[in-house]
Structure formats: C-alpha cells, structure tokens
Amino acid sequence: MNFDLILRNAHLPDGRTGVDIGCRDGRIVAVEATLDAQAGKEVDAGGRLVSPPFVDIHFHLDATLSVGTPRFNRSGTLLEGIALWNEQRPTLTQEVVVERAMRYCDLAVAQGLLAIRTHVDVCDDRLVGVEALLEVRERVKDYIDLQLVAFPQDGYFRSPNAAANLARALDRGVDVIGGIPHFERTMEDGRDSVIAQCELAAERGLRVDIHCDETDDPMSRHVETLASETIRLGLQGRVSGSHLTSMHSMDNYYASKLIPLIAESGMHCIPNPLANINLQGRSDTYPKRRGLMRIPELRAKGVNIALGQDSCMDPWYVFGNADMLDVAHMATHAAHMISLDEIRWCFEAITTHAAKAFGLEDYGLTPGCHADFVLLDAKDPIEAIRLRADRLLVVRRGVVLAQTPVRRTTLSLPGRPSQSSVAGYGPAWPAASA
Ligand code: FE2
Image 1 (tube, rainbow, N blue to C red):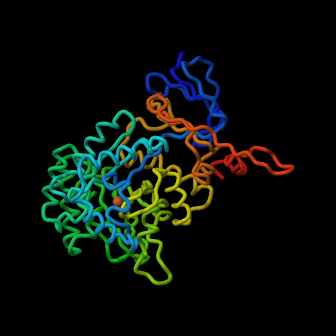
Image 2: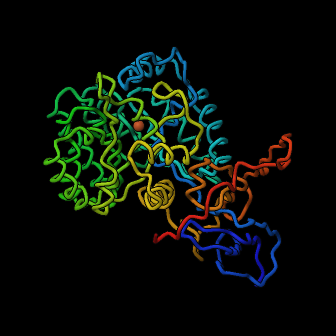
C-alpha cells in the first residue's frame, strides 16, 4: 500500500509509543507499530508526541490583538473590559477586524490550533464583526475550522437591538447562539434570556454556547436554567455553558444538587482559566477567590469539560499566544489538577473534549479520521504541558502547514555538554493507568 505521508516513531497521547501513522488522500489510513510501506513524504517523529490538532472552544476573534485600543484595562475587571470594548466598537471597520483576525489565524496555525469557536458581538447594528468573521471563516476554511457564535455582549434584552441583530446574524450564516444572562438588568431577565436562546436553538436546529454566570456572585444560578432548558427542549449534546465561575463561590449543598443536574443535561462545560484567574475575585480583599467552575467535581460526574482561551491581547487580557498548552498549564494550577492523571486529562480538554463540544467530525488519530495532527517537541502530554512544547510540524489533511526547527542552545560551560535542549529533561512517567 502506498501513502502520501508517513509519520514514523510517534508517541500518541493515549500512551502508545513507536507508532507509524500512514496518510492518504487527506485521511489517516493506518496506525501501526511498523508500517512496511513507501510514502511520497516520510517524517521521523523521533519518539516525540503526535497529537490531534488543538481546539479552542471559546475565543473572541473580533476583539483579538486590539489590546490598548483605545487604552489599557487598568482595573483588570470584566466590566472595565466590556466598557473598553464599547468605546472601541463604534470605530471598528470590517477591514480592521479581518486584518487582525487573519493575523491571529496565522499564529493559531503555527501553534497547531486548527479549530476555533469564536464568539462575535452582535450589539453593533452594523454587524461589522459578523461580516468580518464570516469573511475570515471563508478565507481560512481550508486550514482552520472556524465556528461563529452570535454573542449579545451588552445583553440580549438589555441592549436595544441585540435580539433582532442576533437573528440577523444567524440568517447571515453564524453557526451558534450565544448569551450573557448575568449581564442582563435583573435575574429574571437573565433567566428569560436563557430560555429565549434555547428555544431559538430548538427552532433553528442550532447549538447554544452561553457566557453563563461569569461573576463571583454565588446567587448567579443561570446555569440551572440552561441545564433544565437543555433537558426540556431535547438539546442534549448541543449546549455549552461557558465560564460558570459563580460555581466557585456557591454554597456546597447547592453545588451538590447542581452538578448532577448539569451531568444529566449533557451540557458541555467550558472553563477559561487564563482569563478568569485574572478577571475574577477583583472585589475581594483577602482571601481572593480563584473564580473557576468546579472542574474536578464536574469531571467526577462525567461532564464533558473543554478548556478555552477566551482572549488574546484584547480589552480583557493583555497576554495570550494562541497556545492551548498555556491554557492547560494554567488549568492544572488554578484548578488544583496536578496529579499525572489530571494533567493528562487537561491535555484531552484542549483536544478531544473540545472537539466533542465543537461537533468536529472525523477528529482523532485513528484510521478514517482526517490526517490532521501536530508533532510536538515533547515525549508525552505531561511534558508538552510542562514546556508548552514547540510545534515542530502542523499537518492538515495530510499537508504540512507549518514547521519549526528543534530548538538547541549552545552552552559554554567547563566540563559540561556543549548543547542542550529544553525538551527531554523529565522522568519517564508511569503508564496512563498509574
Ligand atoms: Fe468569552
């Protein structure tokens, strides 16, 4: 059998080592210990980790790379970020948003990030962001799966034309229905907005992804409405609850009732640890709350949890590098998930779990899947997160999109080796079952 591409001697995220991956016509057709075959192109992975591409399940591509416009967020709060966005929004043009988003997509490819669910603000009657990101979705479709969420940043009911604009955005081809119930004027309005958005999703056959309870207020409980509406309308598997940070501050008894309800609803839960470790707890003195959803407890109940980046150099977050390993790294710290099993799980949360919430088809490293993968300068998922390892090779549909040479540092130290690499220092971890 002939192949277009064979990647040899790979370490897979599930722990298998010394594996060859054979690709033909844009698909993976063989994953075996030793492929006795020829290929148009062969790459030696050298025992390094090969992963399916990273998936960012929560991002704001209309705001990315705009940090400092018109000024920087001084308080570090979500609310000042929204206020800054409101100052910037009237000045936006389609050209500006497209140019920034395309530059970000270049960076994403370099980082092995080949699927992005981005929210796009619909509170500007011009729908500049929507038109821009529809254009970007079309321009990058051969190398990035871009999914757009119609997001009423200023509130579905609170912003005068948001509901109508959201419907217009869906008519234009935006994929997913968004919301922000904790930013509506009252708890009742927030609850009603979630119901309206879920009913709209049922009517149009679409997915839902709500910015839900992104607050330190333990009484912000819109997630229970989202879960119960998911069940009532039969939307299981199509609904995501993003942020859910109020869960961090909730009464433990209430959380013990809520978490099984979320599990029953089949809702995907999307923490954004880089953003929320920064945005939450801002009105606290000491101790300062971390402000993340209860990730280990949700995981224990079998909830699908996918980690999102949320922001990259925008009014809410000054850092970011399209690096999902950075997101996983923060999750291990902020959610106290530092056992080997939990670190491996965090790697799944930026790959397979996120692909599930996104609804990506034929994703993975088994025969029949798309020939999409990333070669990392790390021997396994734990080292990949520890180092935020370099992406040596990024492949989509069997075609190389990006390459980075292995980094080497020349040392000049008496009696010591002359060359060193950041990779390869870690111990041999116990097997995945340990
Ligand atoms: Fe967000």
